[in-house]
Length: 275
Image (cartoon, rainbow, N blue to C red; front, top):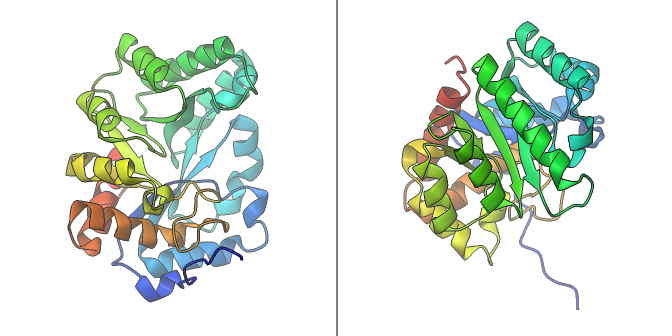
């Protein structure tokens, strides 16, 4: 017998007020080449005022940034993912520095960090790439967006040892529980919540959402990955943040509209967006 899925709900039928922000998406890739304008139109229709598109390296940025020439609501992040740490060469870092200095839509260095789940890059190279990009961000006075998978202790220890407590930092795609959340916010950092907050087994993540200080909370898709219920297993897109927001709001026992606008305000402040 096949597993029964919840009904696929059109996100436009549960739209929220204008002012939401998807803090982290990958809309420049091939998953969206066939319908990117329609995806961005749906995002606006559900109440998203801005979307952070993450470019995974300076070559991707140079090749794909023009996908968003007609979409000023999309701001940019740029970083070398830990699984690609071997590509964090002096030339790549120089290209990143030049891009940040030339493009005002680039608002943060990320996603950068550590990833022990995959074996694509040796850990020593991940540490080197992470450290070099942290120093680039500090030199340019830009926020940092962290990718951390199965490496929480090492990632936190490195950040704390390098003096990043109190620095503008966003822990992307948070999937932990209240204890990890407390250590992150204890360093003065922000946390972004993805679609898996809606998965039935993720009780600890919903408990963490309830405990995170209101001013430190953001939401994201990580599109095309990690779709929330009721679109779990399908391509994710920014419009689906309305479902993530509703699960987060339920965890915090507050109206979804208030949670949506709260996270939007926090994102605009963190990324220094206008409006």
